[in-house]
Amino acid sequence: MQAELMREFEFGTIGEKSKFYGYIVGLSIERGDLPDSPEVPDKMFARFEYGGKTTVYRVPDWELFSILAKHLCDNARMRNEHGDYGYAKLYIEKSSEGWLVDLP
Image 1 (cartoon, one colour):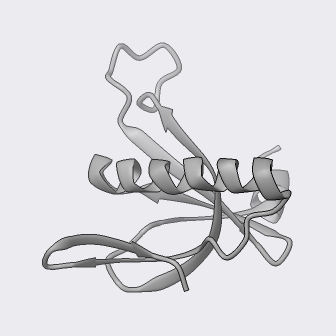
Image 2 (cartoon, one colour):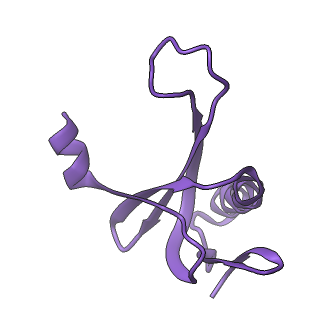
């Protein structure tokens, strides 16, 4: 099963350098590494699609997660109203002022 996932998805962590990610199509929060762990959820992930390819990235902090959540909601509204994501492809970077999540 792990090999199948690796063929379907690419994994990584969202970094500070400016990078194109595509359309955000999902966010998730998961607990620690152990299935029955009492730990507070500490792993946040964002799923993007672009050009028929799906990528999953770990979100490094809650500030970025909250910004991405707004973009995800906007994508859901756009898709519901217009049947597609429009131009909502995202570039993400971190500056001295915080996370910048911009459309092209």
